[in-house]
Length: 128
Image (spheres, rainbow, N blue to C red):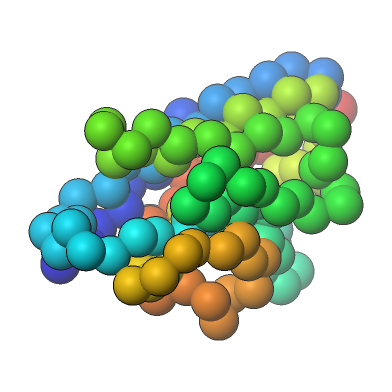
């Protein structure tokens, strides 16, 4: 029943910024906590974890985006964000949000196998 819907993608020039949002619905079981993340996949490349956030605002980032991207969440609004600054053409990809349910404390993870719920993706294109 969990659904994730991304938005905020678009086309920007190198050096620009975008903020992605992911709105979740269907989290009807209040006993569970969630691990959340953003992934991306460029044409011809493997899907890679970009950023993850756990249960106490603990975050993890791929080396390629550290210092440029910031992941955050707004629990009352069931919304996950990815602020992307200083974008470059290598950031061009389809971006997906992902969630994993846990009955305990949610740790961060950038591994695909750690997530069960996925959004449909939003395209980010950065021109040089």
